[in-house]
Image (tube, rainbow, N blue to C red; front, top):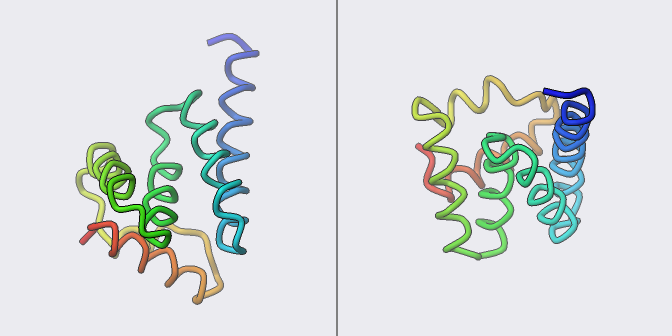
Amino acid sequence: MTAEAFQRKLNAILSADAKGYSRLMGEDEEAIQKFRQALKHLPDYLPAHAYLAVIYSELGRHEETRVEASEVGRLSAQSSLESWKERLPYKNQEILERIIDGLSKAGLK
């Protein structure tokens, strides 16, 4: 991988993670756009698919929720709500519960 390609991937990851948090502050469409942009560079980036599943679930966009939840399952077959609780870095319980609730609504068990 070239340094330029690595930098693009790193930028996509950092942008997606920052937008994941911003989304929780109410910037849905901007966050969706950033996650989609990140997935163009890193199509198997699990956190982007998980956040998109949460966003789409909360927006009532059921088909898109199903697609993203399916990607989460494909990329992390052993994934569970409990494992997400353990690995998500949020100390704020309200934010963490919002994400877990969204993942639950998206079909993660």
